[in-house]
Length: 354
Ligand code: KG4
Ligand code: ZN
Image 1 (cartoon, rainbow, N blue to C red):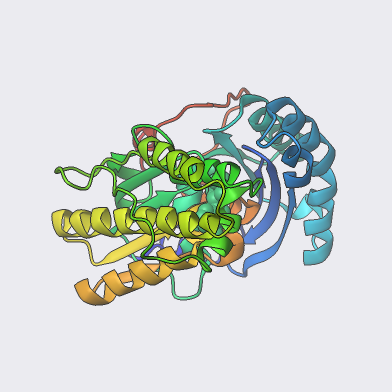
Image 2: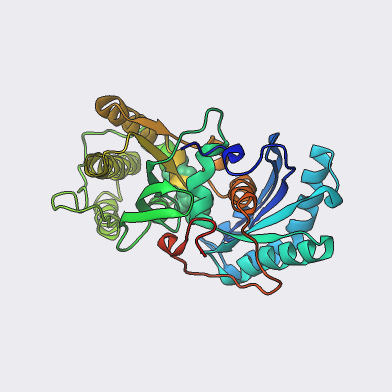
């Protein structure tokens, strides 16, 4: 079955969707057109504001979304040469995420939709991440295996179709991105940690330290990264006097995370027999991970697909796209709405399933 939007609704019906992402520390707004694809997208990252605190401060995040969401909406409309009155629907991230931050995007989306008399739809943030590779040319077909690796989640999901998700394994403690962020903090690299650890690891000696590959010596597809964090902290303390150690520790940490994902993806691909692996979420930007999973794909004759780098981390394009699929299938919110700080992917249903 093809994921193409045209397969879900008549291709000639217009469907111009505004997507708003505000679940954490990025305000993302995008305009997606069923026929023309992604027309425009804008993102404002609050990284500088939160950097001084070493992590995201929820109340500051909400307040900044309030400041950004309408100017970004104007900017995407202007860059696409479209008017608010031309929109056919509005999609927003309804969860999981920070409750105040989610409420900003949801409130603006619902109010705009009410004023324009068009439907609004709340989108699951991880479904949006999962579908982000579909924004690329020649999108893959269902079914596939998905590895979702972000700052808040780490999971392997068997995907049979839109809204048909079976979580095969997930992190029992820290998410992979969170582990990168904590490692960066331990090594004095600041926030956000993923890109900084990646850059430092590239100069590290791969054979100086060997960190454990958590939960790979027993069956199953769950993950655990908190022990790795402790291991990293202990090693950093033992070698505090050695200025070269930080790069070697970053390398050992990165190799351990990447190997763990390769082992679990191989296991999940064998278990499900899927021929396509989608990798999405902030950590999917990591080059070492992409290289290693690319080799796994070649070995297993499995296609490995990613979003464009700009759409690995949080963005409005993935929300507009996921919303467009659901709106095209007839899904819409009523006038009252809620957001869900915690929300399992498995609670989603295919459009039309009630
Ligand atoms: O998907 P995302 O933008 O936000 C959530 O939904 O959580 O992911 C952000 C996470 C952060 O933890 C960040 O450190 C990590 O993705 N990240 C990376 C890289 N770029 C971002 N981790 C490893 N390598 C990277 N290049
Ligand atoms: Zn995310």
